[in-house]
Image (cartoon, rainbow, N blue to C red):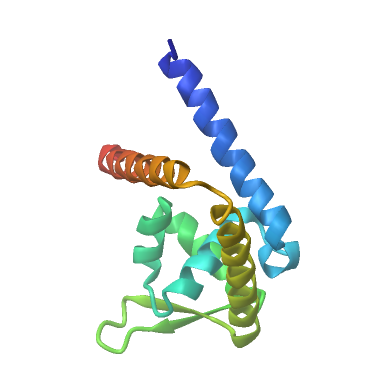
Length: 149
């Protein structure tokens, strides 16, 4: 019988190995010039241009001051543009610079292609199991977000 400790270790190992292998297969976003936290923020902004700093922090599970620090570094590195919301000047909106958007789009396409390739090699039962597992991970993510102070 699998214990919670065994399942926790297995989950960390599997998800971590999956993410690392996908990065190796599809290439690192932004040429490996940024930290993984910075890359996650850039990928999010690439998917949701105009997202606020507060929304980005919540989506990534970051403290607002941590997100602001990442934004400052990425803005200084000419990867991110911060603008003031036209309706509420207290809100900062984020957008990738054009070169950063091109890199994000290329890497996203490479990751999607790599995932599509391996998904096409799974049988119907494996696809069904994966779908159920993703539903469980989504629920666990929701629970973790609810439990945050």
